[in-house]
Image (cartoon, rainbow, N blue to C red; front, side, top):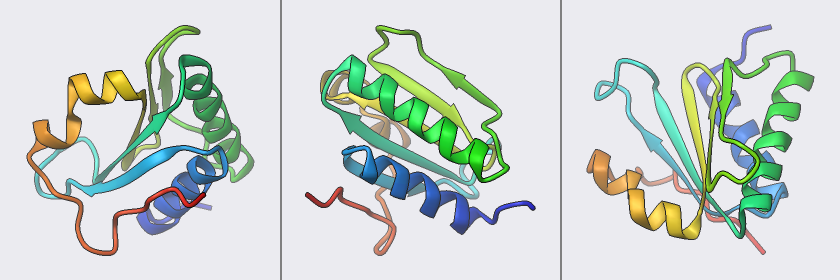
Length: 120
């Protein structure tokens, strides 16, 4: 079964939220990017938390029958990238997210209804 863009986003955001990810942003990059339709950016509290969230995301998509195309970031990485095909997930420490400022780099604002803030 192939998941739709909406299903991929919902599973990714839900998994990150369940993993206590912070400031989860879904950014529509359709028409702006040739490599994906959406980016999800999320903050973790430490390199351990960032790595754990990447592992949870990888496991959730494997269990859904849609394993990630790739996962980048080492054991002490402050940034883990999970390639879900049409959706690229960036899980970063607060300092890495502030430094790289992906939202500003793309100069794209999350669209209404596409911004998810981690509850709790």
